[in-house]
Length: 382
Image (cartoon, rainbow, N blue to C red; front, side, top):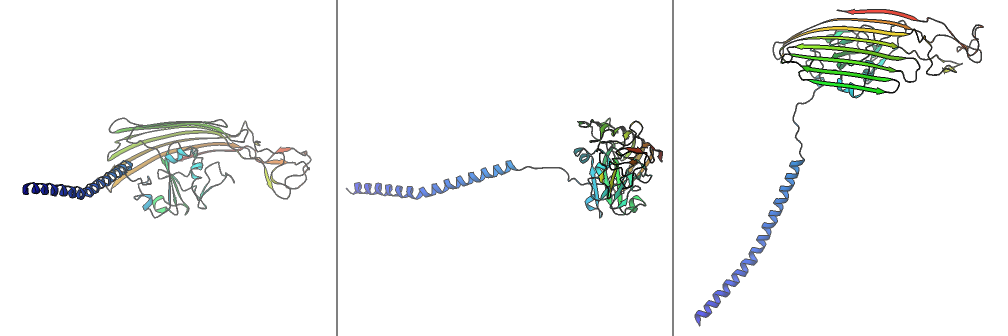
């Protein structure tokens, strides 16, 4: 009997302990399961964040001046410097130097008045900048229109006096245009454009790495367009600029560049305009599209030829020597007829208020003044 009771007692104790053990272990199992769930969610978030991360490798872009006299980046230069790159010129479709400089604050333009030939009349910070224009650091003060930026790598505008780096000039600043030179990599870009008012333009920029030591680059352009809202005026030009570099990428480089560009334009002089007690603005009966010159005679033709030889040798990390030799000739032939003469208004009075002469009836215009202004100029640089 005792043995049976003992057996039953042992069995009961075992069952009781088993129940207690099950009850005690159940929360522990649930807690471990929750931890597994939390760990799994954290892992999923980490993986998702890892997938969303974007790693960019490369070098920090810093705008620099191409002149060897500028030893610091633009950011570290204690002077206001504006650099307009070739990418900006192409993206904004800037077709002339005037268009490019119009995007820079503090620059205005004048007209060819007082016997001044048609040219880039640039004012920088209120001072005439005609003698402060340079190309690759070489002064280019000839009076002509720098009409197309197809061969320009970038344009650098430095505000303030710069006689230390650019020689004597005005205190307004300097404008330096940097021409395109061969690059280490082969890149070919072709562009074309068609628009209203007979706008047609085509450009080619081909840079070819011929060998380990030689690279060629060819820039070419052809352009024409009429003036919107005008009947006669138009612009036509074409240009080509080949260049070659020997020793590309090495410590010693020799670069030969050549530029030839021809322009054939009919310049616009506008319409007669008076602002006084009798008239306020354009004369009555004059349309904005009217031309008051000689359409079969007026012309503005220019030819630019430029050859540049640049030698560079790197002696060390901080020491180098450089020599730039340039020959340039610019010829310009101009015949223009400004809208000058006698205008007899409908009330038989002149725009000044005086009575019309007997030779000019009311509502008529008699050509007069210095018609067919003639200029044939040539500028040479060596």
